[in-house]
Image: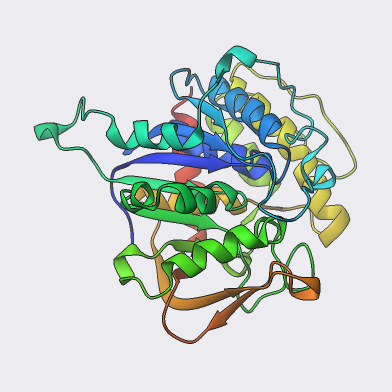
Length: 340
């Protein structure tokens, strides 16, 4: 299964793997990034907006609006994860303050503007389909379903990174981070989609698939070499203040150094699971993947908080079961080469 050329609205909690996803969205062909809205998860929604603007600026993308969405979960207290993504969300990367880059608007109006944008530059004046990509907690999507469900229906496709299906969690034994952060939002979303036609169901990338896609230091060194910039050392226990002529690679290398070390400290391997990058690249149509229909129950309280349990029909999602992991890194490399 693949998806073709389209517009994208990205709803993010920009930490390190969101930054990887944004760099792909900014550099890939066949995808037009229309807007970015933020939510609290990896870091606060406000810091996520600053980080998002920094990544886009590093990619030379200055015309995509960035807007802060909901700043707290629906019912549970806000928790962020500086131990995973660093104190401000992008590891060791330097992120300048750019308050002028953050638009003062309701995230829902930004979604509407993206959907209503005229079809400039498209053959036959036909507006391409628009995907809503969600790489953080589902707080904004749940809020949108409460406030304007008809607007949500206008998205041609919804792609979610979240959950863990028949697979250990990364926050508790059973729960993945995004779903654990705002379980009530996730429950609202899957309840909404339960029983809807297959084509309307969100495509969901859980840990069971994202953790099969492992980034190694050789990937990042290769991207730098292909761009004609110095290769980073990327050695366990070391922090190199990396700088090159390409702002996007400078940012990514410094951010990913933190992420590599986190995975070594917590999982015993100097690798990175780029969860959000995987969800993003599925949009482009160059990475093949397979899905299955699943019902989804989200745990709310206690040990079950954030757990995503597969339930019998009716279905609520299209769970990604197989992906060409090698193609993920080839496609990201193609996007990064566009910044040379």
